[in-house]
Amino acid sequence: MCRLISLFVALAVVCPAAFAAAPAVESVQGLYEGARTDSSGSHKFEARVVALGKGAYKVFIREAGQDGAVTKAELDGKTEGEAVTFSGASGDNAWKASYAKGTIKGTCGKGGKVEMKRIERVSPTMGTKSPAGAVVMIDGKNFDEVVAKPGKDGKVPKWQVAADGGVLIAKGGIRSKQSFGGSFKMHVEFKVPLRAEGRSQGRGNSGCFMPNGDEVQVLDSFGMTTYKGGGCGGLYKYKDPDAFDAFSLASAPPQQWQTYDIEYTVESKDSKPTGKPVITVFHNGIKIHDKVQLRRNAKAGPFQFQDHGNPVQYRNLWVLPKK
Image (tube, rainbow, N blue to C red; front, side, top):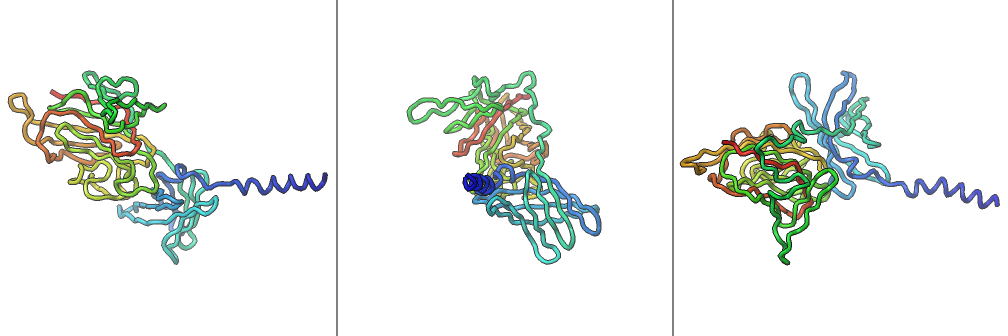
């Protein structure tokens, strides 16, 4: 009996370690705010922890000094067993830290300490209600204003609606039933998936096509770069968002809801659209395009939301035509 009890005790000690797992990628990746402390005091910074797949991470750190100068640093992260650790630079500038329950702690530089906590910033326009006169295209309940592309069997796919109102992009894409040719204001809420092993255009790809055919790109650009105009908020293949880089992007982490607020202005002649439209775009409340002339001529057409084989979701999507 004593031996049996001893065996149970041994298993109770060994089993938790044997079944312990590394933190979920979803909980590690994301936006962090923190401070490093050294002999000169405390210095606040922002960090983007980007999942790269197979337990690897890249951390982009951005610290603004009192003189306005910005210092940037990069760390590499890796998963070993149940631990996620980060390191970068060397000598007196070396950083070493580890993750636990939403916090990354460690040392930085000679005698310095660092601590950063995962946060979630919500767009100031999140949940904006459709005003009077707006055409509501997606609200998670009524789909009278949009059309999904039929499959090869001729059947229209069923709408897949999540508990938070998100509508999964239908295979083949979605378009509005109505055509729009004039000026308008538009609100879009979207969420891209976490595809840690994807790169460039392989991370949460979709797009919002304006009536004239120009596209405002949807992509997971959180700490990731791609070709010109291909990043989140880019005017596809010809203009990046203003101040576009891995540190100043307006992009939120994947799996977090984001917003576009679009102002689209068209001149008209004899009640018909003419010339090239001008567009202003706010991404998560940050202006990323300011009265930019689009490449294609104005014309009446539907809105289209691209299916690029990625499980991107949309919700609270409406357009307000302007006289």
